Length: 267
Image (cartoon, rainbow, N blue to C red; front, side, top):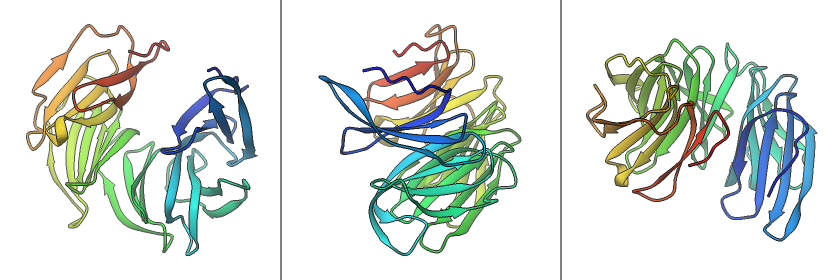
């Protein structure tokens, strides 16, 4: 399957239960496609979602999406124009928009629960949002560079995120950026611990081994492994995997991970 978007894509997400894929473009446009193995992908939506680049897009299903109305499905996007938008999946109509959600450009976004999402910006600020109240319920300034990626451990209430040259975590969430890893508690709204400085720029993150290991993709093509609860320094490294940065990670199962590199190769 190949889709010509016409402009540079900054983000994409697959629907968890349907053959749908969405992409956010450098132009601020949002595209939605239906795909099948034996047919050409069909574009369902093309909307101008943001005035600047659309950097993050995620499907939201069976949850409250920045409104009090219960929705079957929607797409939430974050932009370098600092806004967050919820778009109806069926009609493409805007459900709700939060202007000036961050002081700096939004770079990453992730679903936490049916009523909460987290966003990260270019200056290392991470915010957790109550989508029912359209309000920020947690805020962490744990980095000095952009939050490049986040993942969520629902069983331990932690969010993980990655940033250029750093790494940090929340209770429920983890983040990485400026070469350090921090653990932040969402309940107490405090940073619990922070790793030693790492020379590698951390760009992607995933939780493996049933929550026992955290893997980060780096700028130099190395995978860094952290043992859960021991975040001061990585416990192992996979080197020589790629001469290019590992910008994306996807867990295939608890023992295998898919990597996406700067040169376009998937391994």
